[in-house]
Length: 138
Image 1 (cartoon, rainbow, N blue to C red):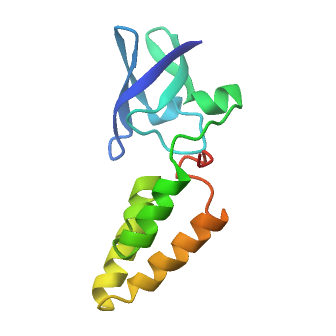
Image 2 (cartoon, rainbow, N blue to C red; image 1 turned 135 degrees about the horizontal axis):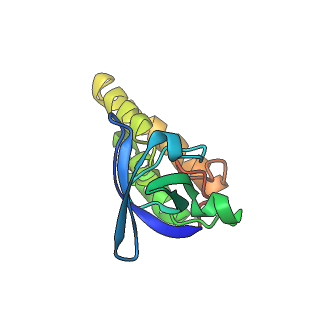
Image 3 (cartoon, helix red, strand yellow; image 1 turned 30 degrees about the vertical axis):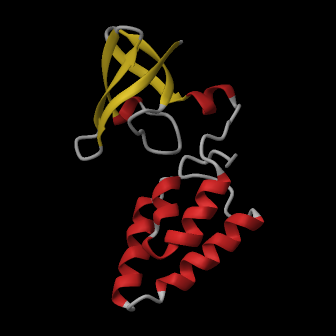
């Protein structure tokens, strides 16, 4: 089992590049075994058979130790002050939802402020407790 980091991933072509120490390996969607899509910067474990990457998955899923990397207080602060534009959703990796909040705010002439405030309360209370990769918030 090799441990590495995804250097790049093209979701349209479903191919990417993973780095382990000084070696680079190309991979495709068929080698990905995790429940969330690959993303640049993800720590992964994988095997190489006949020069091809196989059985690649997130390190957290391989070890079953999921450690949070995003901080709840940052997400809550972003939701409270910039929630109308979805800043907290972008921070947590929920890009589509962030764009939806931004569009809602623009289209309703500012009513997205309420959505941001509600999200701030949900974050503070712990009801929003994971990032887009399923990792708990610190």
